[in-house]
Image (cartoon, rainbow, N blue to C red; front, side):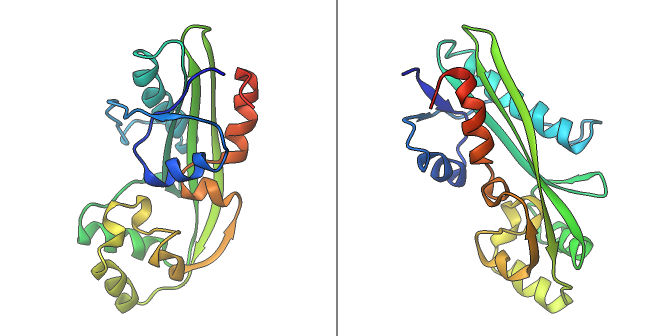
Amino acid sequence: MKKVILASTSPRRKELFEKTGIPFEIVASSYEEDMTLDMSPKDLAMFLSKGKAESVANDNPDAIVIGADTFIAFEDKVLGKPHTKERAKEMLSILSGKQHFIITGFTIIEKSSGKLISKAVESKILLKNLTEKEIEDYIATGEPLDKAGAYAVQGLGANLIEKIEGDYSNILGLPVDEVLEALKEFEVN
């Protein structure tokens, strides 16, 4: 079987892909993502995932490389990782009681054959109406600072969620069913 590389250091993506049973390696991408590009959220997700996949594929032309990028979109604006408590509070206040989307773009590329598939998968989330104290208590845990949209679905942030529609693995960072379907085009089953 062809060598498969996951161009991601995300522990959640690694864990999700391990469940496929497909042997793979992890190679960190050196691609510098720019969340400020003037694109629709879906186009941006695919563009960033392609950049990550290509940076690894350039050094591994015979491998099948999978790159992915996940973020939150609200009213056509992209919400990445807040990094600061102030920004996390701002994001959670904006999302409180509102529906938004988690978008994961993924790209699978094999340089030697020139084959490339890039897609964006969208899931909907509705957060509960959060009080200022609930937001501050959650931020005090430190969890939201390095999570897109300032909350972690798979962590304490699950308590903030009212409703989820769509692929749960997509929400965690890799839409496994869609990726497996696309890998068939590369003769990986």
